[in-house]
Length: 133
Image 1 (cartoon, rainbow, N blue to C red):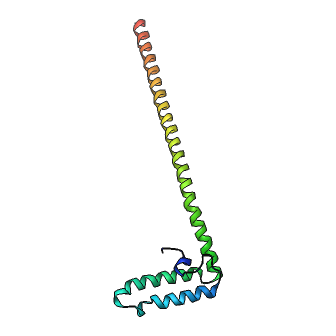
Image 2 (image 1 turned 135 degrees about the horizontal axis):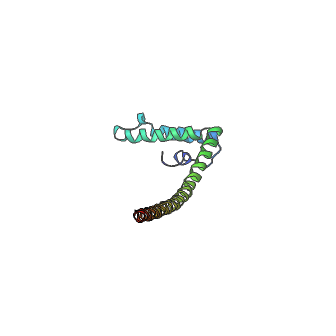
Image 3 (image 1 turned 45 degrees about the vertical axis):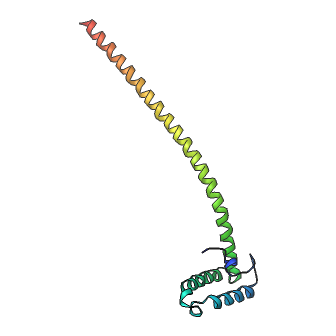
């Protein structure tokens, strides 16, 4: 849904007046009800009624308002936190990649040194065998 439930019902943000919310819902529902509108505006009216019903359901009483307000606050914070966590993840991932590349490079160098030593020992053994013969 677009806009906050308060905007849709045209009441002040964090309105705590159940009666005002109900009156605005009723007034807007009568104004936008699909049965009261022409065929040309029927689709738009149905869409507006869905918005009104959604908004009213979210803030019609103190319990639903509190839940809606907490969820909205959490979603706003969560969006900011997601950016922070994504940045941290990517930064950490980049470091992991660099460390991983260094480990792979060190392993490759170690393997190369091992092969060179093995080859040198093999040559020495071959040379020693030839001298014994």
